[in-house]
Image (cartoon, rainbow, N blue to C red; front, side, top):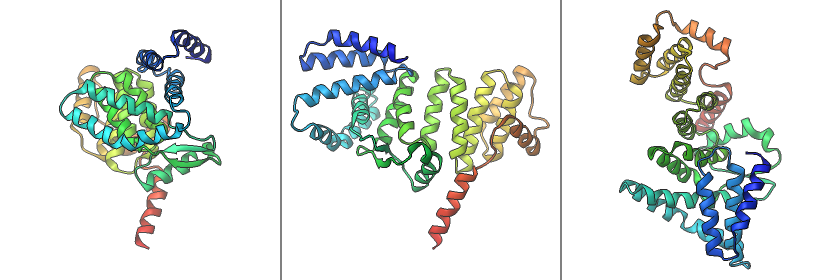
Length: 308
C-alpha cells in the first residue's frame, strides 16, 4: 500500500466523518477493523490511530497529555483483565480489550529525537545498541511508559490461537519494532508468518533470530523454523541438514518427525550429514552456525561484570 492508496482511503474516511466524536470514532474503528489484518496497511493504521486520538484530545484540548497518562495508569489493570478473560476462554472480549491497548501503545506521543523500546534484559539492550546504533543515530532510547511487550505478545498469541494469524502480524510487527532482539517475540512473529504461508518472511525472521540467540535451545528452534520453510519450498536436502543441525543443539521430537516425513516423501535421508559437512554447506548458503560473535562478546562482558 503506497502513499496514494493511503490518501485515497483517508479521503474516503474523511467523507464519512460528521464532527460528532462518538460517530467519528465508530467510523474510524470500522475502517481499522477492515485493514487491521493487512500487513501492508501499517501506514494507514497509524493514520487511523492518530485520528482517533486527535478526536479524543480535542474533547479536552487543555490536557491532551493527561489523556494518555490516564490510559497508562489503567493499562496494567486492563491487561490483567484481558488475561483473565483469556483464562475464561472469553476470547472475543479479550481481543477487544487488547486491541484498544495496542492502539494506545501505537499512538502514545514520542518526540522526533527519541525512539521507544521495551527490553526485558540488559543483554537485549546491549545487542540492540550493537545492531542498531547506526540506525538510531543520536536519538535517545526511551522505555515505553506502557511496558507494551506483554500486551502486544499476548494479543498476537491470542489472535494466532483464534485462527487470525494475519491479524496477529499487526501487534507482533509493532512489538518487533520495540524489541527486535527478544527471541520469544521473534519466534511468535515467525509463527504468524508460517501460518499465513509467508515462508520467505518466516525464513528471514528465523535467520535474524540466529544473530540474537544466546542459548542452545534458541539456536535449535531457529534451525527448525528455517528447515520447515525450506521443506515447504521443496528444498528437502537443505531442510534435513538444518533439522540435523537443530538436533545438534537440542533433541527434538518435532525435528525427528519432520526428517522421517521428508524421507518418506522424497527419499532424502539424514545419512551422511555429519557436523563438518553441515557447517560447510551452511557456509556455502550463508547460514551462520552457533552463537554470533556479538552475542558471545556481550555474554562474556556480562559474565565478567558479574564476577567483579
